[in-house]
Length: 171
Image (cartoon, rainbow, N blue to C red; front, side, top):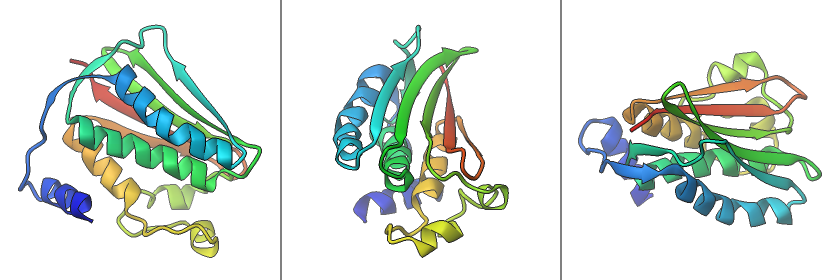
């Protein structure tokens, strides 16, 4: 909970990001090393897909950025049924860094997508499942990405999986 209180302070403007040049590939590979085994234990295929220009550097608070991406990947693993796949991809696009977390899980209906980044919101399916959660992770991830001058979007449809795309300004 100490970390979340730091994010709350960031949100309230009481804390500044500790910005420094961050190489995305090593940061994302560290996250993949942690999440990959979780996916494997659940019977999921986990793929890393660096783009051709994967040696990207961004101005970021590495700890907070790692938290945001880890949250997206952890959610993908939690909600994708055994036998499915989870993917982490990154590339340079139009002078920015693009990070994609995608899965072929159950997907999210459009009405729920509109509330997905609201604090304490959980989809009806998540509420009915045995998967624990408070509905804070995506709100915190969006807050972190926004404070980095970036954006986060979701693309999903029931039965077709979910794709989160993060855009961060290049260094």
